[in-house]
Image 1 (spheres, rainbow, N blue to C red):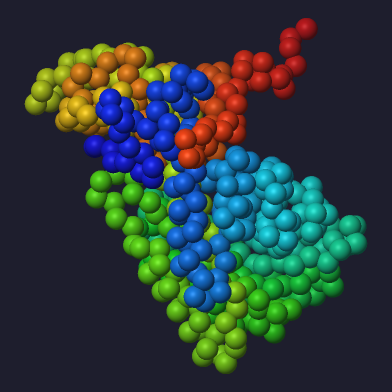
Image 2 (cartoon, helix red, strand yellow):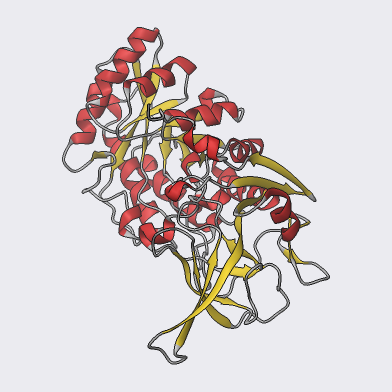
Length: 438
């Protein structure tokens, strides 16, 4: 599949790729490959688009830090006026270091440690989103020890099964996430929170899944969350906020066409408002938690082709040509995890027709195919620079040291300047935490 330009990407006079006004080859030679490249202007544009969509009803946007928790990226999103939702103490620390006031952060997690709960209370986090009944007394104990009250919300399991990959569905009843509405677990948790003097129940949260091409499941989940909040309002300190989660998809490959974000959030807002209007209650603050939508299309990964090799196969052409690059599943495990699809372009030969099929593979001791059917120039060879599109979300976040490879660097490019926000790991970094054999 052929890749298309994203954000500020363009071809220069010599037919080579530029991002943020800088030649991709210059970025690769300066910072090395593989290289995560974040197009600052594209990320800012997506943030502004989402913020504009929620402005008519006074909604808020909280960036789902799990998508890309690099401090530089968090800071970029924070500058545009987004809040943050975090799912661990590490993500909380990253958000704080990026400049987020703690009151603009929500803490999620289905198995929070005592240390995470205590840290959240100590810093004065905006809300802890409770995921299980057992979490209630533990959080209350942390509040007592610290001597602080804590605003809390309930994550609900609304019984919504979205159309997406099984590995990224989270709103169904059979899920590790959230408090089941239909079983009564959500109401039991609400009453438990109400019985704790230090805990203030101020809202509900729902997240039904990821990479959704339409908003149907998000609308349904938010409506059910609002319906629960209305029915159980006696247990609430005040129903101040409904968080509808994220999950809004982006186009990774041709043919994927997500619903316009303005239309999607309008439908969600109408569903939530309807439940509160029927009960004669004021509309609470409606918050969305996009992650991939804000940073996905703003990211690209540059790889150097190391090997071109053709092998015989049973097909119309009788052969398959592999391009093995200097990265792979350690810097992007998503194709192996759940069949994520990507496109690529030859940054060195943009003006040549991208009409020949290649299999782009990684360098790891696995069959780590990055793109099974990449359309690239027929003359693509070792030494060429490939640009894989749409890697701003869940690539850096999921990267590992598999095969003891150091993790890549990350740069933010904007207005003709490149800023290193994550340096490339060294072998010393990899072995830093190990106790050597005596």
